[in-house]
Length: 386
Image (cartoon, rainbow, N blue to C red; front, side):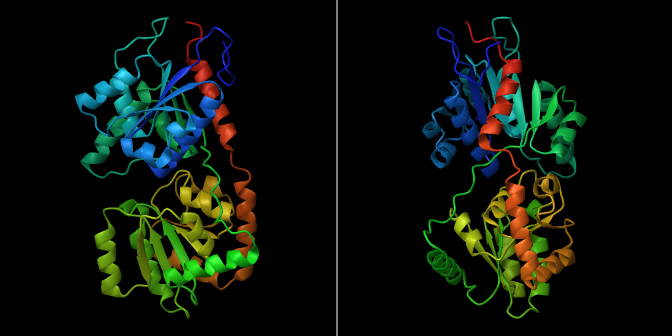
């Protein structure tokens, strides 16, 4: 078989892939953009099917891929559009549960390869959905359907691989995704870096006080209520640390009302596109989620050398190793203690900075991620010759 990792020989058609995104979290969307660029550079044809706004945000066409807007719905019209997009595909790669469900519906019963095989479906589980009660039962059924419909399930953390296997996946493999290395703030010299950092802290109201940063959608499973509980302990410090949260979501109203009612030292910043600058200004980054795989915030914090306090859940321990302070999920006291001790210990913060940079250097690079996924495509796709 011709290896997809290099352009096909003269006279043979390139491998044709369809990459499907559903809602498109920041992590999965950035991964698909990176993957598309790497595939195109290796002579693979890439069509990205996703909601229209994602191409405006992530510029898949700028990476050399074709783009087809497909709404994040599972109605017959949307599924038919996805089915049409997959007509000539040698392989379909869905990212996330919702995208995988729609892709399996679009591919159901179709046999398009020369040998009569179903068009192979690869699914990457970037994260896991959160549900309770009856919805949790439905979620398990959907996960089982996706796991069994997939030729290969790629999990971005070991616990996701285990989850896929428990749902009946025939072939589940660990495939940590590589995010693009965050761009540092555009500052040419040390003095300018200090000036920009001071300016950012002044704008946030943290010139003479520690600045703590959390980033992510304002949703219940992100653990923001625990963060607010922890700030009560910080109110006794002098000066009082300021927690800023960058992100938007359904919990904003609940969180803001509580901040106002209790006088908590917290600011909700809304959606921001300057997270690298915010990280450069922060003393400590915080991740309080119930579950994470390869957290974008953890990734960016360690790359930036910013000390991280995170919950020991999902793929976080695997990702950060000993380069972060880990606490149990939902334990506001443990979180508050970890932050308080870090703020009082400059040597420990410097140690975590050094360890974080070293840990980040061990993560897979974008080219390595593309090469691993191409090897999976090689196993599944028909020979290039038509």
